[in-house]
Length: 132
Image 1 (cartoon, rainbow, N blue to C red):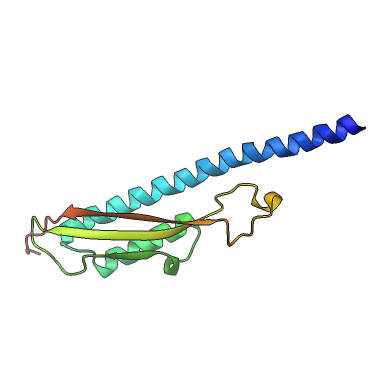
Image 2: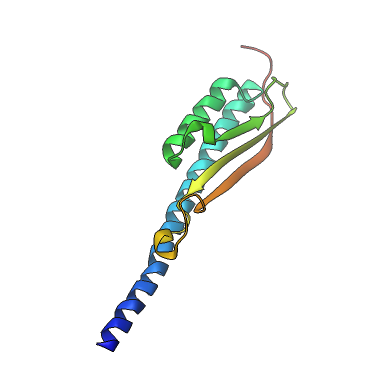
């Protein structure tokens, strides 16, 4: 009986590692999606010469749908006035990643503590020529 209890305890402990691997892969997938969405928004911003309110709203909505948070949780900042070709457009996107630890309930980690805030920032050269 003692061996059965010890065996079950070992299986439970080892399953935490398996769940964490799956959780890590899911988080990595969400990070890659966010980077792709931000790069797409930056390409649009390069054509417009800045981060337009419409571009920011679309990016927030796209990230919120995929990351399972509200658009208000996502912060987008950067160059908001059009700059001409060759000038620098800066951007910074901050968003929460929830569910980082897979077996958080088993380990006693609260839902609020199982969140990481990720930031993607950079700059790009404007391609805006001033023509509509």
